[in-house]
Image (cartoon, rainbow, N blue to C red; front, side):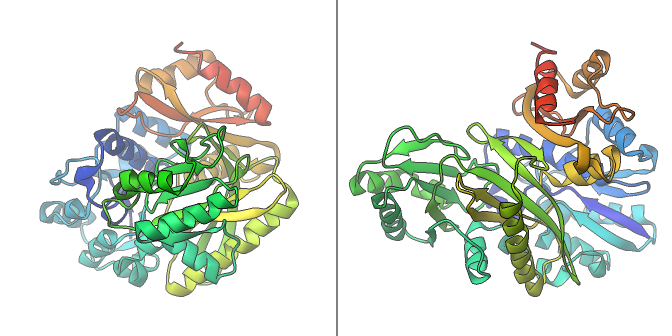
Amino acid sequence: MARLLIANCFTDELAGDSARLPQAHLQTAAASSHLLLWFARDGDLVVLPVEPEPELLAYVTDMTGTDASTLRLLVPPPGTTGTELLTGERLGNPQFREELRKTLDGRPVDTVLALTPDAAVASLARFLGAEQAVPGYGFVSQGGGTLVNSKAVFRAVAAGAGVPLPEGAVCTNRQGAEDTIMELLDAGHPVMLKRDYACGGLGNEILTPVPGVEPVGAGRSLQVRDRAAVREYLQDRWLWLTNEGHHPAVVERYFPDSRAIFVEFLIDDHGAVFSQQGEMLSAPVANAQVIPSPQLEAGPLAVLVTAGARLCESLRSLGYRGFFCADAIVTGDGDVRFTEYNGRITGSTHIYTIIGGQIVGPDYAKDRVLVEYCGWPVPSFAAAAERLAESGLAYDRDTRTGVVIVKAYSHADGTIRYCAVAEDLAAAARIRDRVESLFA
C-alpha cells in the first residue's frame, strides 16, 4: 500500500487564469506548497510543483523523524504557465502519470492527501484506480472544491445553517453591490469588499464613511462620502473584485477592533471533530497567528465550535470530507460573526497537528502557545536555520520552547515564516525580538 501526497497549494479552480497572477504570487504559492512535507511519513510519494531545497527537506524530516531517504519526490513537467503551480495540466501530463505508475510498481494507493481537494486530484486518482483513496471522491470529482473554498457560497451555506454572519450580500452585478454598500454606509457602518477566491486578506478592501478606519484584514481603506464616490470606486475596481467577471463579489459590514478567530475541524463519514482554534493577527493583512488563542473567552468559543459544527454538517451532507476551517470575528462586545470557510489544508493545519501535536506533544495547548510570524528577511533557509542554532533559539525538545521554521524560503520577498513555541504570548514576543535581530 502507498500514500500519495499532492502539494497543490493554489489550484486551477481557485486561481482562475494563472497566467494573470503576478510572479510574486506564484512564487509564494510554490513556497507554500512545500508545507505538505510536514505531513510526509516514511515511504510516501510526494508530488510537488518544484523540488524543495535540500536544506528544507532535511530540516523538516529531522523535526518529524521521517526518513528522508525513503521518500520519493516527483515533479511533473512544466505547464504552459510555468512551474510554480500544480495545475490540472501538469497533474494530467502523460509522461508524469507514467512515471508515477512505474514508481508505485504495482502497489495500490490507499491514501491520497492533497493540500486542496480538486477535480485534477480526483482525475489522477481515477487514473491510478484509487478513487476510494480520495476523501469525498464523488464530491471532489465534480468540482466540489470550489464550493468549500468560495466566500460567496459560504454565505449561502452559513445563512441556511443558521450561522451568524455580518450584514451584507453576495453581489453579481455593480448595481447590487452599490445598493448593498450604500445601505451599510447609510447606517454608519464601514464596509468590507471581498474577492471570492483570495487568501490572507489580499483580496479585501474597506470603504468607510468616516476617516480613521484602519484596514485590518484588508489591503487598504478608502473613505467614500456619497453614492457617487461608491459608483466611481466600483467602476474602477469591479473587474478586480470579480476576477475579470468570473466570480461574484462579497459585500459585508466591517467591524473595527474585532478579533479574527478560526476554528478547524476534521470531517469524515461519521461527523466532524473539532481540532483546534487560533487567532489571526494582521498589519494590515495577515502577518501572524496564535494557536490556541489564549485570550478567547468561553462564551464566544462555545458559539464558534457549535456554529462551526453546523457548517461542517451542511458540507458533510453534500459529500465533503477532510480538513475544514471556519473563520470568524469576535467583536468588542463578544458577538461572533462568521466570515468565510476553507475546505483544505490551511496555513494553520500543520502548525497545530504536526508542530504542536507531534513535536511539542499532544498536550501542548495546556502549557504552550504556538505563534507563527510571517516575513522574517533572511539570506536563505540554510542561513536562517544555522543562525537559529548558533544563537540558542532553535527549538529545544527538552524545554519544549524555541523556534521552528515552518515554511520554505520565499523568493518573492526573501523571507521565511517561523513558529515561536513559548509558555505564553509575552515569552513568544521576546523570542520574536531576538530572532528578528539576528540578521539586522
